[in-house]
Length: 371
Image (tube, rainbow, N blue to C red; front, side):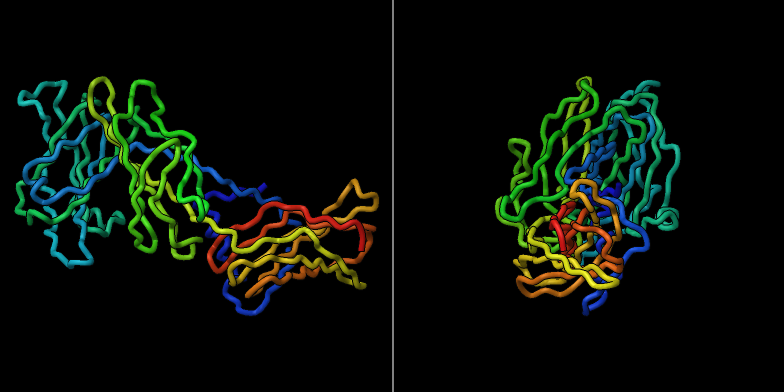
């Protein structure tokens, strides 16, 4: 059985069908397996990030750590709107020191390796990042990140801490789509994987592919939006909810950040059950009526099944058809096969909105006793 996750679901819609303006029909060489659309996702985080000012970085920023081996990345955040200059970072000017004035074997942290901007760029970080690899004998501690480099006070910098092999792991199970009319996204669980870490505060920020400004609050296992999301589908990318979690473990602070991607869903079209079949010498055509709420290009994939007793149905072939629809219409799926059964049905039907990258229906069986 095929599975669609939020990361692969929308990429799968970018088939060759979507680049044609005219109707396109394709019969697969083999019967296609059933498609299951997963409506939930499981995410984990052993990292956190924050945005700080140049002034704060010069004064020193306290960073909580929960692993003996950590990776600290610092990158300038360019303000596209104001085109503000942000000073490139000198990694040799950065330091990480314990908050305690007295260094002992327990609280000593060692910067094991530094990565300058060129090395980070060669590794694929093209945002001006520099990084520190930190090793410590003590997992739970706070270190102060500081620079002695001259920086503009109100310049913005991203600090990203990755704590590999940390025992502090945030786990979230959430829906991967919101319903356009609901103004919220549900989550099933949000907690740390160990009982020793307790959440103190959490907040969420919406990141919109169309730069909407929407306030988010968290109540009753829902992320609630203060207004309806204007954009639906995934043609311009996904929405994201960015979580910031402050927690405590053994009386020491810990932090975690996590992004939840999701699509804002709308039922732009729907396949109706009154499908009809017709047969010729070499083809069986299944005509599926569609109720279309928003004009666009839609595709329908289904497997034809046949039976002689109405009980045992056998797979025959899988066909997909794509067509531009401006209102209620139908899609006629032509299956190249001889009529050798007394009754037919469509199985494993998948309806997609290719204009907006939405999976609208999956799977379905559409019955008709005979042709």
